[in-house]
Each structure stands twice: as structure tokens, then as C-alpha cells.
Image (cartoon, rainbow, N blue to C red; front, side, top):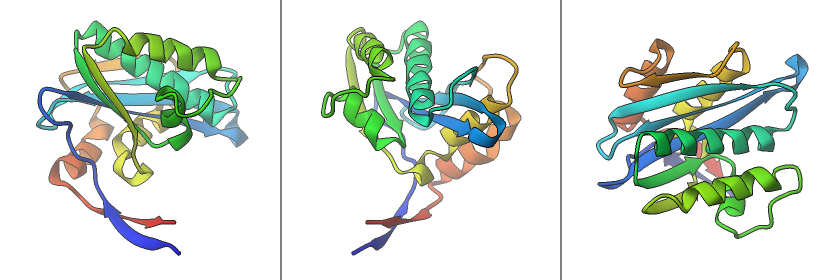
Length: 177
């Protein structure tokens, strides 16, 4: 039996910084990308990135690259406590060692787990796609980007409406099985 739930993005508790990430794959265009963003405990924008992926046709690999890039960015910004959310339940289970990583992403997942050990604290959990729309937008931008790009302090203009919805706690319906 399924039920309708309303979900929304929420900030991480203080002093944590939240990383939302996503991967995107457009099979018809033979293109993939990853994107993500970091926000503080009150929801304020810290940084974002887009990462086009050449010769990647697997959405799970795109997700893994999104997590890897987001962790690299957080570490460079000297963030110590990271709260990670992605909309791939499989990826979150692999990162949390609840499932053996699939062979095609095993080395990248292990690299992410190694990066996580450098943080003072970390939490990685699955979030529904409807509460991960800002990262989804960035991942879709990445698919058609020419190169990796990062923004600090000021988000790219196209991200602003998504950030506003998140900040205001806009609810989105989700059919949960």
C-alpha cells in the first residue's frame, strides 16, 4: 500500500554543514553530470558545483562522482562536520557500508569512505528527490556544461529559485510505497 507524504529540504543541525548532491544521465544525448551544494545550519549558501562527466552512461557512477566532488569541496573549505544527503538510496547504503558497492563504483565509493574519515563527524542519509531539487538542478546543468565550475558565497542565478523554495520549506508531494 502506498501513501502520499509531503517532503521538503531542511538544514542540518548546528554546527553541521549539509551537502546535497546528485547525478544526472541523459542517455539519448550520451551525456552525464554531477552537481551539489553546501549550506550552513541556517540554510545559507556556502558553495556549489557542476561537474560534466565524459564517457559516463551510468546514473550510479554520476551519483558517486557527485558525492566525491562534494566531499572534496567541503574538505577544501575546511568543513569539519558534514551532513550528506542524496536521492540515490543505493549510493547512501553503499557509503554507509550497508550494502557491498557494485563493481562499477566500488573504487569511487571506497575513495568517498576514505575522504569521510578526514571529517570530525559525518552523517550520510537518503533523501527523496523532491527534497533534493537544488542538487538535481545543478546535476542537470552539469550534463551540458563544458567544464567543472564552482561558486562560492553567491549561487549561480538559475539556482536561486530552488534555494528560495528550500529556505521557505516548500512542501512537495511524494508517493511512498
